[in-house]
Structures are given as structure tokens and as C-alpha cells.
Amino acid sequence: MAKKIMIQGTMSNAGKSLICAGLCRVFSQDGYRTAPFKSQNMALNSFITRDGLEMGRAQVVQAEAAGIEPSVRMNPILLKPTGDMGSQVIVNGEVVGNMSAREYFAYKKELIPDIMSAFCSLEEEYDMIVIEGAGSPAEINLKSDDIVNMGLAQMVDAPVLLVGDIDRGGVFAQLLGTLMLLEEREKERVKGLIINKFRGDKTILDSGIEMLKERGGVPVVGVMPYLQVDIEDEDSLTERFSKGGVFFSEEVQIDIAVIRMPRISNFTDFLAFENAGGVSLRYVKKLPELKNPDMIVLPGTKNTMEDLRWLRQSGLEAAILKAAAKGTVVWGICGGYQMLGETLTDCDAIESGKPTRINGMGLLPVRTNFTGEKTRTRVTGSFQHVRGVLEGLSGMEFEGYEIHMGETAGSGQAMSVIYDSVADRLSEDGICGENVYGTYVHGIFDKEDIAQKILEVLARKKGVSLKDIRGVDLKKYKTRQYDILADAARKYLDMERIYEIIGESYGL
Image (cartoon, rainbow, N blue to C red; front, side, top):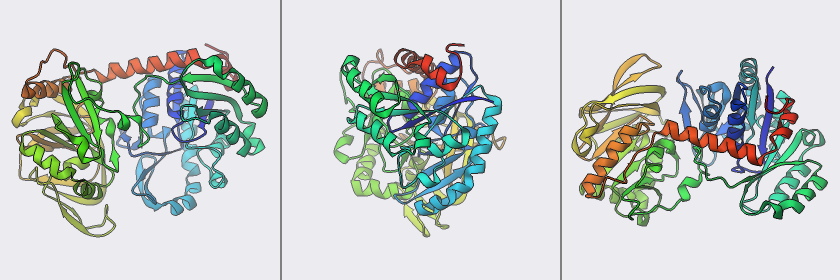
């Protein structure tokens, strides 16, 4: 049976996912076969496994950190919000349906067999399992039917490390308040506290750490600094959206604007540009922020029609149409691709709750019909018939995944040919104009040569030097980030104590 450790937090975004990824990397480096696990995840930024199943990206990142292939067993329940009051419920990678918050609350305990089946399967295969909680274990209105925090810890008999976020302030109240709200049997599971995102001289915290141990009865097993590490995020709490971009300087010469829609999903599609030299990638949600970028990207969204209406009401649609008319490169992915077409039709009320038909932006000669069947697959492919300013992409290969409701068809020639690894068949994807491009493939920019080619074209079009424009090999880049994270975990966490909590000798 695998040994296990569970990371819970005092709140959302306390840093649970990052701590879990760091521990996955450390245990893997120490020779343990390690897997992540989170019984229930809520996120729009999901991932498709090789067998065409959908899971949360946080556990994908943790699996990559552990050096293993992501499996839907690592996240058996995924909730994708469809609005303020409901979510699409995905169990074992398959869509069960849409439920209101109250409906899901009444239903979720029926999923315990699925949770335990997935966990037990991992237990048989791995030496270590790093379990992530969700939100806070002290949500007293949710505790009676908990399947993701202390309820799960009880089911799998896991010791718990509790993480608090000092960057937001009030970390001592967070940690002590959480412990106070736990039942005694739950508190007994908490074997260590972690203060996360600390900036400054650690000795200043010494008296506070002693007080935490005295009043909480639980030792502090680490103070993690605010790390400058670039690990993929999974939800709307990402700090990427708040980063200010630089329009133009000697170091930054290419400006890319991603439209930050209210229901944006899979925003990790743009990491190849975000980490490229000489490039500023900005997330734009207000008209004055758009300015005059060299490329505009319309990303994926959980609700294409509603976000298209928002685009219109915000004035951004008119600005994008104006920019496209002037020759600015516009690229739509998934929901963004659907928006670029002529019409969007939802006869079966899949997206909108009632039969609906609206006009698209009219930049590509395609029409989208929403159906009840969800496309989920991994693909490889190559650009075949790319026209316009990015014609140099023709012949280049890419890989990625599709995850969408609806089918898109039109009169233009397909931009690429893809191989669907799940269905084992070839098909066509995407379409383009002179400076407008659309595709369903997430991750299409991830290969260094594709990102590099696009940046070179944008630089020539703008008339700026190419010497500082360089792409990035995302796989190598991610590997470096995971190693940086593991080094920090070893330096700032008491790994010897953590191994003792798990029940293993340190450093084996």
C-alpha cells in the first residue's frame, strides 16, 4: 500500500497545488514512484488525457512534476462552472451533466465509490500519493458531506499538512482559526503547519511560530518564500491576469493581447509566448487596455455565446474588428474560434438554456452548431493550407488536444490536418483568412518552432529587430521550473520531519 500525505489550506489560493507539486518532485527525485490525487477539483482550465478523458490541470502539473503520465484517476471529479450557481459535473473524465450547487451538494456523496476506486487503484501502483484538498477544511456548512478535505483524509487515513498564505496577511489567524474550527478527531490528523508566500527576514517570524505551536499544538514544518517559479495555473485566481504588460521597449518589441473573457478557459495555451524573449503577453478585459497589439488572441471559454455578448457590450468586439481590418493578426482558439465565425446556433439549449441563434464576428466563413456531445481528444497534426501573413506555418507539425461542445463547418479550405488519437482517424481543423486564424486545438503554440515562426513574422511585419525575439522549449522550461520548486521545498520545508509524518525514513 502506498504511503500518503495530504495538503490542505486555510483558503483557496493558499498555495496547496504548488506545495503538492514540489513534494511530488522531491519524492520522485528520492526514488519513490509518486502520484498526485485530488478527489474533487473546480476549474475551467482542464486537460485531456491520452485516452480522451478530462481532468483538472493542477493534477496534470503535479503528475509532470513526478515524472509520470497524467491519469484521470488522479482527479476523478471535475466541476466546471457554467455560471454563478451551477457547474458541469465530470466524473472519471466523462460529463455527467449540469447541476446547480444545491443539486450537486445533494448528489456528491454518491460519488464516494468513484473516489475510492480511483484512489485504491493509485495505491496499488505507486509508493507515495500526494493528496490535495480544496478551499478550506473549516467550511462548517460543508463539513457534513465533505469528500475533498477532512472527509477524504478520514476515508484514506492520511496525515495532513495545513498551509496558510502570509502574503494576504492574517496567517496566524488563518492557521489557528482553522484548527479551532476542526473537530478533535480532525485536528489530530494535522501533523504540521506550513506558512507560504513569505517575503523578508524569516527570523521576524520566530516568535509567531512559537506561538502557533503553543496555541495550536501543531509544529510549523516550513516557511516557504514567495517563489519566482513559473508553474501552470488552473483557475481564475491565477496571478497571470494581474501582470501588467509592456507595450514596447528595447527589451520588449512584440505585444500580444489575450482577451480575458469572464469565462476564460485553458489560458495556459499562451505560455510559449508569455515566456518568449522580447515579447509582452497581456490579458485584456477593458477596451482602454487593448491599445494596438501586434496580435490579438481570443481564447477558449466555458460559454461562447455569453462571452461573445460580453465582448460586444464591452466594446472590445468593435475594436477587434477594426484592428483586423487594419491587418492585425487575430487568432481564435476553441470558443474564440467559434466567435470568429458567421453564426452560432444552439437549437438544443446546450449552452444558453433555451434555443438560441446569434451572429458571430464574421471574420471567418464558418458556422457553429452546439450539440450535446462533447469532443475530448488528443491530436497531432500539421499546418497544410495557411494563407496570409502566417503562410510560413505551412508544413509545420503541432500537437495538442480538443475539448469543446459544438461542431464548426464552413466554405473555406481547412488550415490543418489532424490525427485524432482517441478515434484513430484523420480529420481537418481550422480555417484562416489573410490575417485571421481559427482552430480547435489547444496547445497549438507549444512547440518552440511554431511560436518562433509566428514571432518572427510579427517582428518583420512591425519592422523591428529579430535578434531579441526567441521562442522557448516549453518541456525543458517546465522541467527547470519543477526542479527549482523541488530545491525550494528541500531548503525551506523540514523534509526529514515530513518523511517521519508519512512514516518513511528521510532521503531513501
